[in-house]
Amino acid sequence: MDSRIPLSLKRVLALSGCSALLVLSSALLAGRSGAVLITDSPKEVVDEAWQIIYRNYLDSTGDYDKGSWRQLRKELLSKSYSTRNEAYEAIRGMLLTLEDPYTRFMDPDEFKELHIDTSGELTGVGIQLSFDEETELLTVVAPIEDGPAATVGVQTNDRIVGIDGKDARGMRSEEAVKLIRGPIGSRVTLTLDRDGKTFDVVIIRDRISINPVVSRINTTADGAQVGYIRLKQFSANAATDMSKVVKDMEAQGVDAYVLDLRFNPGGLLEASVDISDQWLDVDVPIVSIQSGRSRRIRFTREEPLTSDPLVILVNEVSASASEILSGAIQDNDRGQLVGEQTFGKGLVQSVRALSDGSGITVTISKYLTPDGRDIHREGIAPDVEATLSMEELRDLGVDGLGTSKDRQYRVAEGVVLKALVQAGGGDAQDI
Image (cartoon, rainbow, N blue to C red; front, side, top):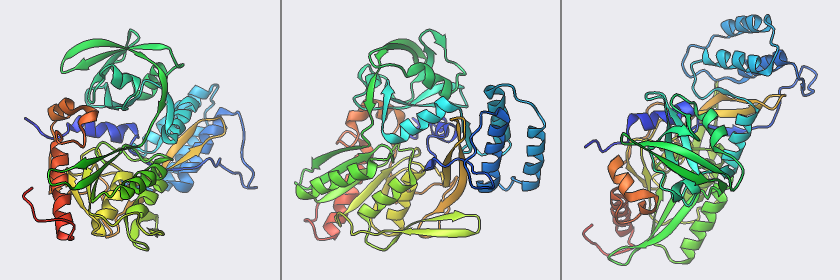
């Protein structure tokens, strides 16, 4: 039995962009006079996108040549674009030449969806969805707990092969999102493929509040109180929710913590910095952000919310902002990592709006851990390795994560209890 997460599931995060570490910006391209350029001309939108790349793009492959990029602009602007869609196809083709899966174009509807995803609230069925390039199938990364899809039994790694009777094989995630999302109370029928068997599920759309933090206090056989916190994404409200949970657990006398970042694809840079600040001592490095020849180091500013022993759970889908937090904890000797090698996403994207309501995400910098490790494509190795097979994950379900049924959690709990003993917080025990 292969106990590791399938490579196809790992790759969908890179190819869909959902693991991108984002710096949100509503700034539009300014002209030479400094005024914002607003126009309905499709050709102007093409030029806006070109200018953003020319001025901001950080080449991570070594293949980007500014001379060739300038020549490409001449070719693009020599053509006529009678519709927005023609301009959009030109922009997509232009960005493909960069061979950077994280620098991508979004039409107005897709651009709105991006802001919904990072704001923490949406209307739909409640799934994280990506396109698997290997199988050319839509793949469920994870159902959102207590959402409509989870309620009817949709599971991680299910393949969506039909949407309301329309064949979804080969359909990109952007198109699928438009079909799956809809008004509250309306119905959508998904045809799923699970282990070679296909079946339909009828889901009633609803408002989905993406609570980024799930928590509980687990009591061990020896009476220790372990605070289990699962962070699902680094959204705009993640740091605030994390702070509330930790303060509440501290008030209840928790002895140690397990912070679960498994299947967390990342999110906002500032959320990762703020959450790191909650766990680390004041004035220690969190992350280095390198843009061209310049490098900026982000330091903690506040005293930590707790100094209790900490373990972080990670797997192959823990990406981007998850790796910033994991690297900061590991390099500052604040706690240990348990699980599997992380995804390896070390690039930062800025989200730029174009004047017609569309937008692009553009790679502008890369980040390094406090010790200067560049983890892009490499990931972060755990201090203690522990695996969990897809079969075990399906048997667990989302409700079983962080319980005694969860093999990776049991290892993490054992590690954090040993740290508690070493810190003088308990008696020696067999774990």
